[in-house]
Image (tube, protein in one colour):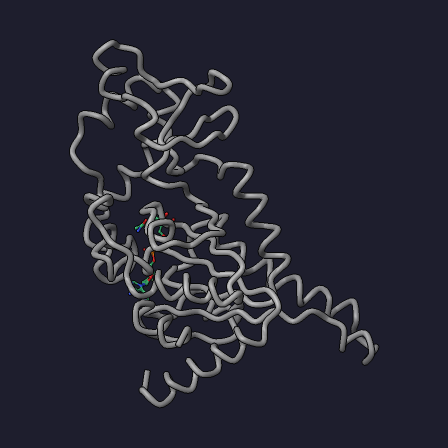
Length: 280
Ligand code: NAD
C-alpha cells in the first residue's frame, strides 16, 4: 500500500473513531506477531509452515472430555505449546495504542481471540477474552475464572488429585483457553454479541477472520445495518435514522471480510505501526 494512501486511510480512521459514539476493537493473532508470537495462518504462521500441528490442535478438547485427569498430567509434563513461552512476551505498540484509545474515552471494549494475555498486561480495562487466556483456569460448570497460581497444580499431580476442582461449585477445572470443538463460554459469548449489536464502529485488527463463531461478530454488526436499511426502504425520513456501522480492518493482507464487503475499508499494514498512528 502506497504511503500516501496509507496516511489518508489512517486520517480517515482517526476521524471515524473520533466521530463515533461507541467504538469496539476485535483483535486476532496478527496483533501479537510483533511481540514475537507467531500467528497460525499468516505467511509465517505455525500452521502455514506445519499443517500437522493444526491436526494435533484439533484433538486437545476431545482429550479433556475423555479423561480430564490425563489431560492435566499431559499439560503439566509436556514442553511449551505451539506458541512458545507466552509469559515471556511483552505487549507491543499496537496493544498500547488500543489502551490509549480506551483512555481517551473512544474505545469502549476490546474483544480478543488471543490467549496471550497481552491486552490485559498492556492495561486494557474492558476486555473480553473470547478464546480465554493462557494465564487463567476456568471451571467448566460455573465458568468461574482463576489465576494459575491459585492452584498448586504440581502438588495435585504428585498427590494424584488431578483434575483440579472449582472452589465455588466443585466442578472440573480446565485451562481457560478454548479448544477446537469447545463451546465459547456463555458469558463472553453473550457479552461479545451485545457489544457487536451496540457498536457503531468496529476496528478489526490482525485477524484472518476465518475462525467461527468469532468471525460472525463483524457480520452481525454489518447485518444490523442492512436489516435496518431494508426496513426503512422507501422512506427518506426513516433512512436518516438507520444506525450506520463503520467497520475498519487493520491487517497485513486482505481477508474474507475485505473480499465480502463486510468491512468498509482496510488499512493494509502492521498493527504495531498503524494503530499508534491512528491514536496519535
Ligand atoms: P490467524 O493466524 O488466522 O490470522 C492472523 C492474521 O493477521 C493474518 O491475516 C495475518 O496476515 C495478519 N497479521 C500477521 N501479523 C500482522 C501484523 N503485525 N499486523 C497486521 N496483521 C498481521 O489469526 P486469528 O484470526 O486470530 O485466528 C487464529 C486463532 O488461533 C485465534 O482464534 C487465536 O485464539 C489463536 N491464536 C492465538 C495467538 C495468540 O494468542 N497470540 C496466536 C496464534 C493463534
